[in-house]
Length: 244
Ligand SMILES: N[C@@H](CCC(=O)N[C@@H](CS)C(=O)NCC(=O)O)C(=O)O
Image (cartoon, rainbow, N blue to C red; front, side, top):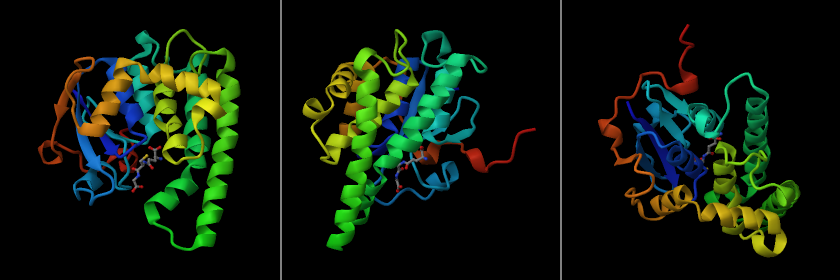
């Protein structure tokens, strides 16, 4: 059975799950969530926390959290170098990198998303959120810029892994939130982002976000499906009891 990726727009971190699915090249469908509009109530069955990305695996299980979804795709794509066999040192390195990106880099943007989403009015609160967010974002981009100075991909292998899909999805937020222009501030991050922006999977995912057009790409995307058409298990993802 094909997998289903639930992706959120605008500018969701779920872009990474789409890029990684394209790199994987196995059949998948899409459900689009307009995050600034009212979310479909049925999505709560997929993720009670009402967040994207989410996934229906080929076995019909729901899976939430970018880190878990990307590990899942990475393990399926181990032969292509998207991820690594569990128990290997490379798998540990990938887990560490994804964990850093999800907890430190993603979290650095939290004050800026709070400003954006909640429409904060109080000028003092606005200023504090802005400064707090910018300081944290700059600290993490400085770290990433140094890391990328002498390597092409995050894990320094010859190919991108699912961690690169995630860094592309989050890395664009510095300009989205007008913290800086990457080119002038973090040249290595800028070069890395430029290179990925030229990747066919990334171009496909960006166009999908922008226009909803799911045609083209690697050919593994089977288009959109409506939530109503999906068979969703009663207990979702990490909210379900252990299988055994
Ligand atoms: N811990 C989750 C966070 C997911 C998350 O916050 N997704 C955002 C989009 S990047 C979202 O769905 N936001 C909608 C909302 O919070 O209302 C993960 O890493 O997957």
